[in-house]
Image 1 (tube, rainbow, N blue to C red):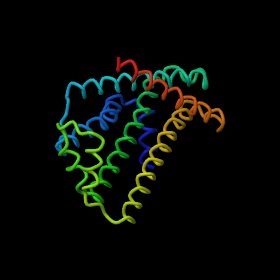
Image 2: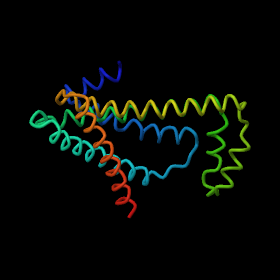
Image 3: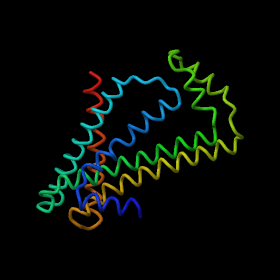
Image 4: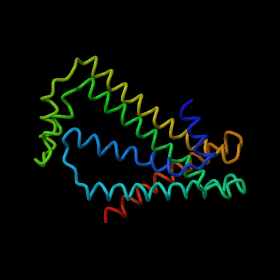
Length: 205
């Protein structure tokens, strides 16, 4: 219900300021948690990462707008900022999933993050990482299994919520039957994935 009301509000009011806040939440969480846990941080590289993600945010919003023009027609005109604002809820979903994942690890395996952080600056190999992880006092096998199930549940929930966000935006632009709006959602997910891959390649050159 919270995400539904928020998504509707973002679409209706086109609050770009709040959209930028949602966009920044996952990256700021990554920065804050890394610093809090003692991880070394390349701020130039981090700024580069934020710039790439911002470009993706804008381009993905444009992609969604263009697709909706094709699927929904004239109803889409003049709604780009509304679509972009609503699309940002996707980043809030990512932030919530990341927060839950970190909390789960911190609660069930409290020595995990300090142990990984202790390897920063040593250029550890895969064997070093494996040795460090094996040296951590893990909970019982049943607890580890429970943690894996919870991780899987969080991941699946995040994927479903993001899919629902995209589907709902299509319905907010113009309500249609299930099938055409589902096709729009699937096409957008596929093309946005390719867009992300293309941007990653360009920024790696």
